[in-house]
Length: 453
Image (cartoon, rainbow, N blue to C red; front, side, top):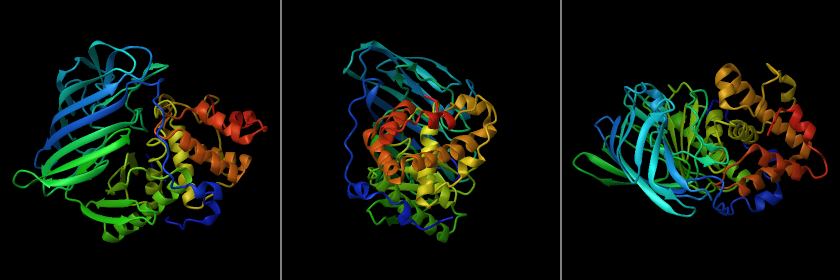
């Protein structure tokens, strides 16, 4: 998330010959993750909206497998958007009438719900839970909010929390950044809505006629971490990048056609450039939803971004398709792993080399780290963007200067490939960088740049 004008894609920062030769080769799927569970989730959702597209009711089913050696006696659902309501008296997301498990009480500010399974689920065993679902979009131009006739519906579908070697991750919602930590899943979502509303969504959508005056949008998304959509009387502009990726730009009425065309061009260029550096974009198409009233600049979801009219913000959000999306991370514990990497990718797209940017670094305290968690940044919110985005990308520019451009280019590409559809951690990135550095120790580099882990 964040604002990060339009510049030419320069050959000076293009991928190395070795990378470029295989830039659009498909990446192998990650092996089954036995550290994190539940995995291999399949979400099947059917929702029907009111006439405004701001209230949705229906049903969600989640099938999943216990991929870890320890049995699963329960799972947790994250109802993230209950942060935007009043807990517990009025919550925008309501899950009820459960099958396949017994629901407890909402916890963590009404954003977590424990589901006790009928019997412990052994490793490699699968089961499913189902529930009725209600979503009411609150007023406000937000990543989950309603701006006049336009509804933005991010993080509204309940998704499985992750249990890893640290236990269940039940971190609180943060409005300052992201709390989201989820594993690669498949979504099959059917959205019944008035025909007057366009409904851009994660995945590939097919529209068919519904009841009188209504349309059914069926969106299918494979190997994504979550699902988002919007609903409103948008104007749609479509293009295809030189590499063959379809981009759909949906704009609110206050945004001009020329602004939409400019953002379409940026999106096409950024998708191709990021693909050349980190591996081919696997989702076929991308939806860009524009509203200049967003307070946050931009927000990323798989194959779907919310944005103001800003080339920098859009290139940044599309880079998140790789760092957070394809290469996942625990966004609450180590936001540096996606925000700094994404801002670094944005700099490369615009031909910025970050020369001397580390010279402007001034630490506020001895406890401030690039790798601090959102718990720290929520307590020091004025420093979050400066450190994680700004200092964070400067550290990666410095790492490029330390390793050399070709070695850094290969490191970033290879690291993305080796974590494709998986989860990145700070120790894993540091180990990969050290391998790229060969006999040159990076210990002083990590200490100087306050990259712990």
